[in-house]
Image (cartoon, rainbow, N blue to C red; front, top):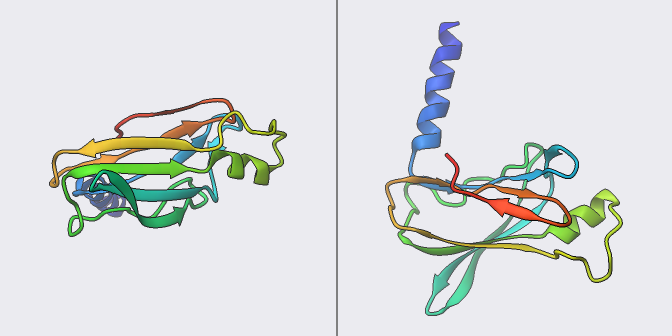
Length: 132
């Protein structure tokens, strides 16, 4: 039991560490969005510049997008490729799809904070919030 308590404290510390994380929940199917392509960009000189492209894992999460060492105040963008994901699942989508991508533009004003930007999505809707 003590080992579980130590693990829980370590996990809580990691979640509170400076950085940026994200995940996608497929609310149409009631499961994590596995294999979703996500582009991560920073606003630079009036245009978004791609930093990296990642894919969500079996839990719908990506690797940390920014860590304590790479955190910077600024404006960022996450692009979740929804139509690509739902097409791979075999979901019948109209042509063109109602939602091709979920584009989330957000600011981070505190480089010492942890920002978690999850997306809950269906082929017809998405929402986001600042998580923990």
